[in-house]
Image (cartoon, rainbow, N blue to C red; front, side):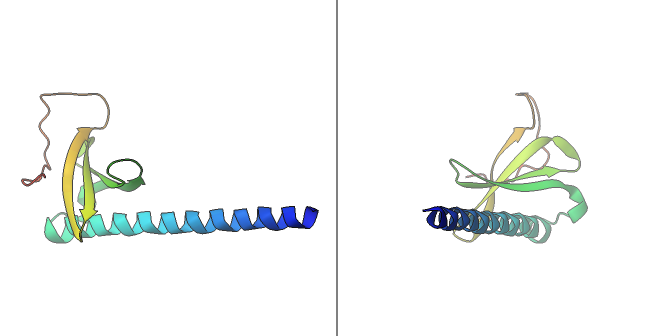
Length: 110
């Protein structure tokens, strides 16, 4: 009985490790794709990007958040759909200001 329990626990640890590695790799890939989109298609420089991170959650299932170096209090949300990356929303980092003017809003939001 103890041997089966050990094998089961080791299997769970291995499965958890593999899933964690796959998710980490996927997040890095999405971060790199959004950075590539911003640098190549939107003419930003790497120095213009303060923080880029991908989250996996509810709707949309995968969302990459970008904070620009010259606008630290605003977040811009990007997603990939059918090999197309686009900005779908923006929001302040904290609080809400209805009069705030976003500097990096893209002209074609869906």
